[in-house]
Image 1 (cartoon, helix red, strand yellow):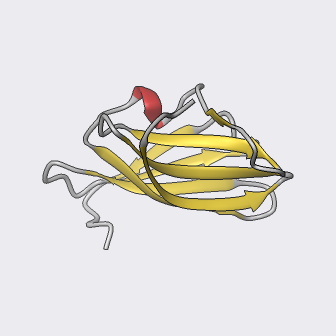
Image 2: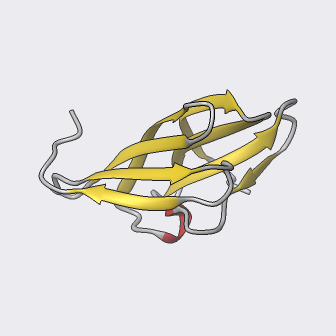
Length: 102
């Protein structure tokens, strides 16, 4: 569970809430909750929680079958992070190169 930080975006879909943001230690996070959103769990498998503390996640969307979280690699990088999940729990990262994220 993420304790402290900022929530940058959230979406409801597939009978759960998914939120993205920055933890107090600077690392990006993805967390999920049931429909009531009464308790949240950090997504752990293949998530940015194990990634670079200079990365950031800004928004998350749900297409009806796929969640997509987007952010950037900070520290002067022009790469954009794109995280994809079909269940909101297990995520796969794709990084584009040479984009500003603006």
